[in-house]
Image (cartoon, rainbow, N blue to C red; front, side, top):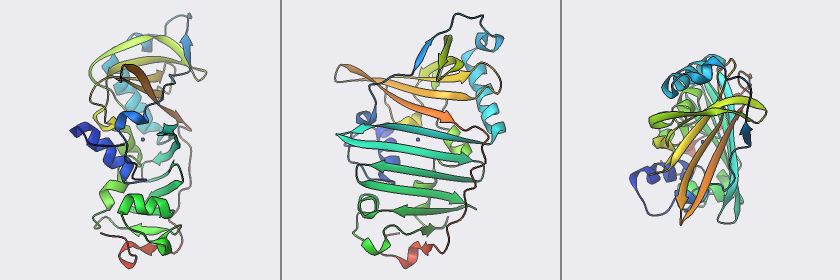
Length: 258
């Protein structure tokens, strides 16, 4: 893995962040001014890096599914408030911890069911109600509940990976070293799920096997200044041991709508 009045692509991003912490901000205000930690690599170019952008991304998505799990994370500042998101994704389970200012939300997906644990501020932001008795407790949201879809997306591996690949005509960069890993970048238009109406997106893919994404960088110009949003990918293939919470409250037994 953001808001104010908008375009259709921005509304998608707004809804996804609002479902967790309800930030009322412009999608582009989530963008960081920091770019990737990268430098050019003068070594011999690996054969993988000479393939087309489409071939590289196809190989990257295949390798990612084969690895079976990953941690994706980002951090920035939104309207002066610290924002962070860390998601452990695997094929059948996942967990995301998201914080914006004082609002914190944890979402787990286990066995086809969503479980959320929100503090008071996150409940107010996500559901528009004050429910202090339901705060800081695990709440079960079954697939039949109207809230399920908005909490479920972007957490399991297949859903998270659908938000990674850049769109449009893809080009490749020279080989670089990003976070101490030799990579090739694939650049195109931002993935629709990132919520950017314009700009560019580059996914840096490891040039040696497994050819997994190392970092995603989406850029756009806001008020005449180029800004960049960065997501890093680590812990490929790790077993996260994400379990169903003990004794969760069924959402229908809480004061939360839906």
